[in-house]
Image (tube, rainbow, N blue to C red):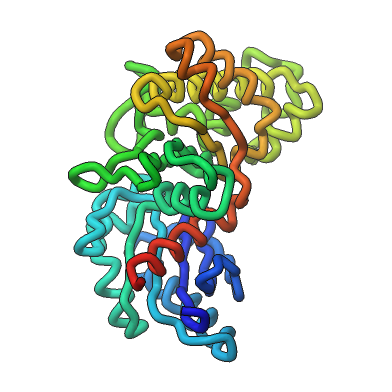
Length: 317
């Protein structure tokens, strides 16, 4: 296996990352592109195949690429390689991903939910490495989740287990791309942070964020670090809702560790105390005191890629 390589794709609502990875989990070549706001899946498929060809060419001297493993922000049919529903990249709904990409690259293609892939990556190489029971949450364009039970990813009967971002935290809350309302994703993701700023701006006339036409979650984070009251209230709400959902998971699953990653987790210092407060208030005492809540260690650009590659190598072995 030492000279065999995997093309690992991590497709997010904002970025597409394609890498060539060896069996040790070393990234030999990485390409990062913007995810297009496509109306047809062919546009995204073309971008993926071109990035894959670039990575494949770049590593010829290191070994042979044996498969492509893709982590996508969607509910999937892994056995048939079909994307069922992708709220943050809706052009992919119903797309027969594996067969089409496989035909283009003449490689086997393995499809996985992006949060499951991140969970597998953190369990194999990152912050959950020494734990057999873990919950991994990714805070990005949406909110993803992966659950490790006795060392294995929990998939459920239809392969959709771990959709932590679609736990309802507000019965009559904001509509979600999944078709429901009040999902955690609408209160703890990067897009939710921006929406909450706009909704609350009139209550904070002195905020540096008020009246801005272009707001990013990073700008909100910077404002929060500087003590902006609007930004701090947004992150308080984010932590409140995230903590309430995680407290329920502590009660149901009794995990050893909760790992929080994704781009929006960069604001850790602004929301984590509110998360822990809700876990203390709502989780059963013993599991609530036992569970560790830690930051992901692989980073937003590595967890999904390494998890997807690990899955592929495991299947090959």
